[in-house]
Image (cartoon, rainbow, N blue to C red):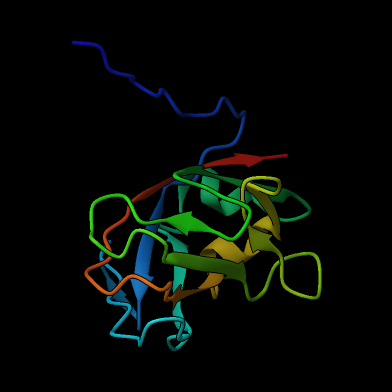
Length: 150
């Protein structure tokens, strides 16, 4: 039997550990709700915020944070990885990124940019939105991120 292992990380002179926050609460599970086939769910806001304002997080002014996402990325967003609704996906986009309008995370644009100093204030804000395909069923997915400060 064969399988794949993906190694993902970054090397940076500045480090600042981030924690996902959903509605102000630390957590790593985003409930996307239920949508009808071919329907669109609500945009669920979340942020990646500094675990502490001390250490490397205190020296982020005048820097850019590049956040690179990894997972089952397609040109629409993150594909279903374990559920039955195999043609559904999650659209992920920035809210307060360096570029406006919002940057969409997809296979051809897996890295998005932020003013790094936002890590210790409002955080790097995103929205996640479930887009239903034709096949009903559950949606399950996971994504990883790495941050490089420059």
